[in-house]
Image 1 (spheres, rainbow, N blue to C red):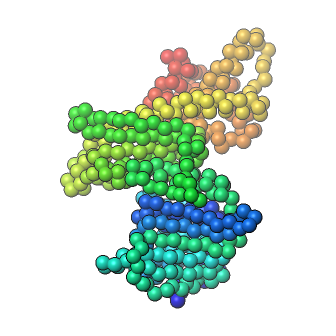
Image 2 (cartoon, helix red, strand yellow; image 1 turned 90 degrees about the horizontal axis):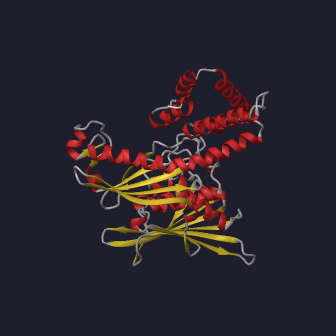
Image 3 (tube, rainbow, N blue to C red; image 1 turned 30 degrees about the horizontal axis):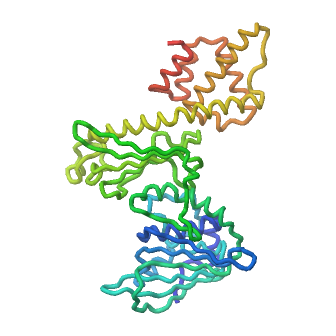
Length: 422
C-alpha cells in the first residue's frame, strides 16, 4: 500500500481545474511520455448507449516497479491549484509532471486501475495499480510476475460519473494532439479513438510541403507548413526542428506567434543540419558549437530562418486580407464610422474609402489593437483616425503610427505608400 504526500482532499483541490476532457488528454500524454508510438482509447457503453467504462492503452515502456513510488507520489510543496493550460513544457513529449496526470481521473470516474508491463533485465514483468477517487492519497499494487506480453500500459476508468460525448472528445483531442501527431507523422505515431484513427484534417485550413536548399553548403531543409482552423489547446504557433532521423531537436515560437489575428500555424523543419546542432549558443564560434557543430549564427540556419519567415508572411497576407475585410464589416455594424458631413458625395465616399483602407492596413500590421477594443472604444479610435486623416500632416500621422505600432520593414513601406503615396 502506497501513501501520497498530501491528502485526498488536497489533491482534488490542487487538480480541480481539470475537466474530464483535459484529464483524458493527460493520460494519453502519459503514454506518449513513456515512449509510446500508439495510444488507443476504448469505450464500453451501457444499454442506453452512454459511456460507462473507458480504457487507454499504450505501447510505451511501462511503469517499472522500482520507480512506482516516484511515479505515483506527487511532490507538491503546497496545495496551490495546477492549471492544465499554463504548465511549461520544455519538449513536445514532456507533459506529465509529479504524478499530476495520474490522479486527475477523479473528475470523471470513481476508480482507476493500471495494468502495466515493463522490462526487467532479460524478462518482462507485469503488475497492477489501483486507486479510488475517494482515497486519492492511497494506492495499492500487486506483486510483479513474469509475462510474455510486450511492454506497455492500460489504464481502465470505472464507474464514470460524468457524461462524455465521443464526438466532443474527438474534437478536443484533435486540438490537443493534432500538431503533435503531425510532428511525428514520419514515425507513424497513432492515436486511436473507439477503433478509429484520430482524424485532425478538419482542423487543417492550409497545408504545404516544400524544400529550401542553401546552395553554398548544399544544406537541404524539408519544410511542412500547416495553418489551423482553430487554436491548438495549449500549444502556440511554433517552429519544430527535426534531425535527419525525424527526431525532434528543438522547438520555438514563430515570429508571427501571438499576434491576436487568429493565424494559428505550425512549421516543421527537417534537416541533417540538426543532427549535431547547438540551439543554445548565439555565438557563431561558441564553445558549444565546437562540440556540437553548427549554431544559430551559421549561414545555413540564417538562410533557413529568412526563408521560413518569408513563407509565413506570404501565407499570412491573404488570411489577413479576409480578416481585415471582416473587421471593417464589424466596425460598420457597431456604427463606428463617422457620419457623412456637408461634402459632396464623391468626396465623402473617397474619405470613407481611404479610412477603410487605412484601417485594413493597420489591422494587417497590428491586429491585436482591434481585438481588445470594446464597441465604444472602436468608435472612438475610428473617429480619431478619420479626423487625423482629414486635418493632420500625413508625415506626422505616419510618425505617430510608426511609434505606437512598432512598424518596420515591408509593413512600414506599405503604410508609407498608403498614406503618402510613395
